[in-house]
Structure formats: C-alpha cells, structure tokens
Image (cartoon, each protein chain N blue to C red):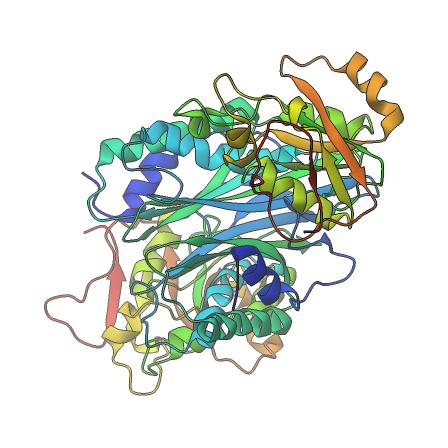
Length: 297
Length: 297
C-alpha cells in the first residue's frame, strides 16, 4: 500500500490543518518554518529521534549516542541557514539501563548543546522497551529567510560540502553539523535551495529536485568521496550530514572566492527543467564511475 | 540510586546549559518558557510522549490514542495560561501496524488539532518495537506572563477545575484540555501558580508546593470527585488533566463571580509557609474521608 515511509508520511499528513499566517512551511522540508516577530525573523521547528538498533547499536558509546541525537536536529537547522535555540529531550528508558550509561548519554547531549549554542530547556522520561532519544529543537533566522528544498531553479549548480560515504565506522556518531556553513550560504544569498544529506546523496538529491519540480544532472566524477569510499558508497551511504545546495550559475566564482571554511566545497552537477521521478538513485546495470543522469526512469 | 523518574530527571538535567536571556524557565514546569518578541510575549515549548502498553493499551481505539497524544501536550499549554500553536509529531511504528490503524491515529490527531487551533507542521516516522507518538508543541502567551508552578504564596487558596478520579474507563483518552479556563485564569491575573493534574492530585499538589517552597493543607471533604470515585481514587488516579492552581485569598469571591465555564470550580485548601516534603501523598493508616495535611513527614 505504502512503498516507503515518505509515501506514508505524505499521504497521512497532506490534509493536516495549518493555520494560515502562522506556519509558512509545514511537513516535507528539513524543518517547519513559522512566522517570527518581524518580517525578517523566522522560527525553525524540528523534531528528530534516534532509536536503539535502528539509529545506533547497543555497543555505541552512550556519550556519542547523546551527541548524535542532538547533532542530527542541529544539522536540519543548519540546512535551512538557521541558528539553533532551545531543545527539549524525550528519553525512552528500558528497564535495564544503568545510571552510568544514562549519565554518559546526558553528558553527550550536554557537551553538544554547549558546543553549538543550544539551550536545553527540559523534556521528559518515559518507559520504553527500547532506548530512544527524541529531540525537539527550535532555531531561527534573522535578516535572511530560511532556505528551502523547493526553491532551486533550472540551471542552478548543485554543490555539496565535505566528502561523502561512510568509511569511518563512527562517522554517523561524530559528524559536525554544518552550522556556520549553512548560515553563511543563506545569509550571503548564495543558496537557492538547501537540505542536509541524511539518507545518502542518491536519495536526497532526488528529494530536492522533486520538491523544486525539477530534474538534475550529476557529474559522478566530481562527487567528493571520503578516503576509501567507493562511488556507490558516496551515493548510497546514509548519515553524511553534509549540506546539499544549489546556487545560480553566475555565483560559482563569488562563492568559491568567499568560502572560508575548512570543509571541502564541490560543484557536482546542475539542475535541469526536466523533472526527476520519485525513484531514488540506484547504480545502473552497466555501472561505471562516470557521468549519470538522475531523471525520470 | 534514583528513587523516582523525577529524581533521575532532576539529577541529570540540573547542570544543563541555558543561554541567559533566551530560556526563562527550563526543566521542571509544565512547559519551558522562552522569551518572545516583546516584553509581554512569551513562547511555551513542550514535548510529550505516549507509548503503547505504558500510556494506552493496544485495545484503545487508535483515533482516541491520537487524540490523547496531542491533548496531553495541549493541557500543559493550558496549565500555563497559553494558547497552542504549531506541533510536530514523531510516530514510532512497529512492523505490524495496519494502514487503517494508522489512518485512525492520524485522524484523531487531525481532529484534535482542528478543535484546539493547533497547526500540524510536520514530523517524522521511525521504526520502533512498540507504537509511540511524541508531540512537540509550541504555544504562547500575549499580554500576560505564563503562570508557573513555583509562584504560589503562603495563604493562597488551592483550587481545582472539574472532578477528580477516573471512573470512566476512557476518561484518560477523552478528557478536555482546560484551554479557555487556563487562559482566563492567567489573563485575568487570578492564578498565582498553576499546573495540570497528570499523576493525581496526591502527587501533583506536593510538586506545586515544593516548586513554590511552601506546604499545603487540603480539606479532603471538599475534593470534587467524579461520580462513583472514592476519595482515594480522586487523590491517586492519574490523568485527570484538570487544572490545579492557587489564588490570593481575597480573589475567591471575584473568581467565583466571574467564572463562566461549564466545568466545576472548587476551592480545596490553602498553601502554608511550612514546607511540604518530597514524598507524594499516601492514604494514612487510619484513613477517613476528612481533613488531612500534606506536610513534611
């Protein structure tokens, strides 16, 4: 009936009530966007969950699990060019969790909050058969509007930060949300659309294209791979948490010259007016490390 | 090591970073309170979860489970005198959930959102061994400050709305959050402190007293019981979701004369300057339906 969670979610939520004038962007983008106190103030609202044996194993160091739970939500704020604010944490506790494991978990949340300027404003605990952490996070943009997935234009260039493909065992626990990079791209007006890569470029780029009602052409040779990662891994591995964004073609040189962050910046393709289908990217039968089209099959 | 979830939560969260000037009230009240756009604008931020076999059984009608998930969070906004705004829903999905059950669940959320003016701004789904619904909800107060648990004064009168004790099997699924009542009590300046009763009066009143660093005396004969409920049930049954609040003694008559809601309003006791201990209320050995003191044991 439902092919994917995306389908299910879209079907169920498409008729949900949104008070006009309050919620500007609802389900379907990295964060919800709410009207702020002034014309150039917007509130970002995000919820994100990590569940044991789904998003982390019981062997993962609890400090890093706490870190990951918060950093994932921060990455979504980054992907709209915002700054994080207050967070509420819901903790699902199985009966057997030790106090020391809990302390390490909270230490990870605490350290990550301090690092990225998040205020931990409370939350709650509940019994649960499996450990989970749900983070509700507020953020904001001031002076510029949040950058959406749905606003890429034909011929826009496609860019990614960093290197893709999970070759380090712990990358999904230790990634750095691209917060200053995202805010720079939004505040300077470079990004025409943006999202973070959470399910792999091969799934997330079609989502951006679909949201913008466009297609896209990727130059596979240019995709920046993590050391030792195959192209397949760079396309398919989830949880890169790098930024995927588009710019007008004429902004390529200004962007490159003003990019002052240590992380890599790579142009990997171009948006096209031909719409991309719903299907995520899969390696073609005659797979070569070359040029490929993400287009309607 | 930790006697209760309250203890655990307090221990773990007491050192959490709060950016001064942003979060006014953090962990420990019904909602977090954040600074709004102006002096008399405050943002309320709440997260609340319901888990199958903890907060509802698999036999509960899914429409009512969806209703309950959202109504619980709305009740916390009501308990601070606020109005709800945007919500994000996180849905934990076990493998065996049918599409029709999901639809009913969402229908319950949808209907409740429309009824109480909540904007459903998105959320996400995740796999989980047990069904759960986490609601992150924003609210606000304009023109008056949110009413806290911690601001009762000695000699304040203690009041509750409605009738306590769960005699209807489905009350925990069908309760009405006291939204207009809470806003009235806050906006008219009646309530000096307020919270909602989620764990039973016998547990929640000591929390309010403790937060206010006061004690309290209850007139047990006055506690409004649901039809057929024993006094013990009225004190101990959780999930009443009625408002528990205090007023200055001289406000009793003005409050009664201006109370225009269909739900019952009852004065049940008085705050005292003698601090209440941490222990929740338990029926005394020589239990009679009479006057009792919730005081330091």
